[in-house]
Image 1 (cartoon, rainbow, N blue to C red):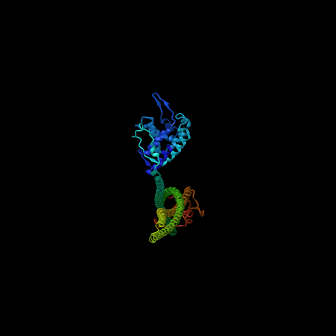
Image 2: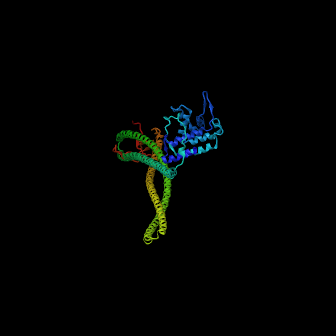
Image 3: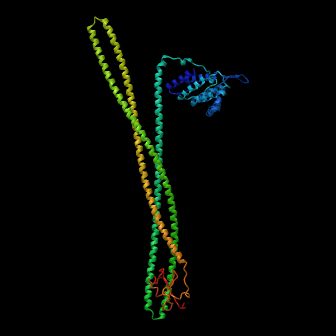
Length: 590
């Protein structure tokens, strides 16, 4: 009875539509039969008031053997309308069927026969091999979707009676089996097509999400590259400003040197022409001393300005070094992002190859389907030829019948026999015609289905081609970004080389200043002879002191003169460092 009820439930569910309610009669009969199967050979347990014989005990044991059954047992215990153990067992069976795990739960129970022996006799159905057979049959119920309402149903007071009239065969059932098989096949095809559509939709959504993420990452990279370009332009402007300031300082110093040379030369000429009187020389020397002291103050002020400019240049160089380090960090980050984009492109390329392989397979399937359609067209033509032949034979037979009726009226007995034979042939031809028409109809339906599949496959190929185009566009964008990144790296390298050159120049200037800072002026008493000609100083050979290197020369040895814009006469210049010489008096005159 369990085999019959399970088989009948599956067949009726396939024809009914697979989703069943609690009022469906075959489902109710299935629960009644399962209750009888579980009650077979059940031991009677003594209680305080009476003897207890219920199936809730072994079903409650499933909770310990199968951890996933804890949820069902807890929900059955929490149902408010159930008062008896039998009602809880019935609710447990309905919930297990809705979960499609009744076969799994009962299989775990049958394996543990030591525990079942506490509830069943040795000859019980659940202790024998027939119990395993029933569990195997219950696996087939996983194709059925049950929608049962357990909460409001009165399961305690139901009477389990088996209706044998449902399992008696009739002529209508024999004829409806073929129809049920066809409906089941159609439903299976429908489920397969729905599952295929779900998979395709999921793949399309994942591809869209990846394309969006790639576009976002590309926009982020473009923004970061634009920021890096702006920073590079700012650095170039600052470098240009520093260079222009450096060139201005150099021009000023050269101009000062030229002016001092001119002044020194003019002073030499005046001294050659003005050797007539010591008073005039003294006045001129005094006046020149004032001018030189003022020049010294001016030059000291300029030196302070230059020192402050040096400090500013050093601070600017430090800031530039910090910016360069930051740019190097950003370049490292950009390279890492480029590596990630390359990895994503490799994944997209591999997926494109997989899609191309799938396209090839689908093209092969399309070719096979076209071959099938050609074969079907050939068979259709053969069937049409047979139809024409049969119609011609029928027309000829009818003509012969008319002739025989007109010619052989007297020979009715013999003609009746022949006429009956002809009628049989006609019936056979008509049946053949019907069969061929049905066959032709099925072939046309198959042709229509094949055309639909071909159209679906063409749409899929078009989508794959579109994806390929999008992938090529992304590759082109990636190449452009690589070019931009390479250009920026080259620009940064050029900036670094230029900054290193300017840093080296600044270090050379610092070293020159350090070398000059250690020198000390000689005292007038100690300086008695010229540094170059080694002759003793006198009124005609006056002392000229270099304010930069500290050396003392006579007026005959220091012939280098430069014009100075602040004084009408040229200024004498040191032979070693080309700095302005200060005239000193050899006498004790203040």
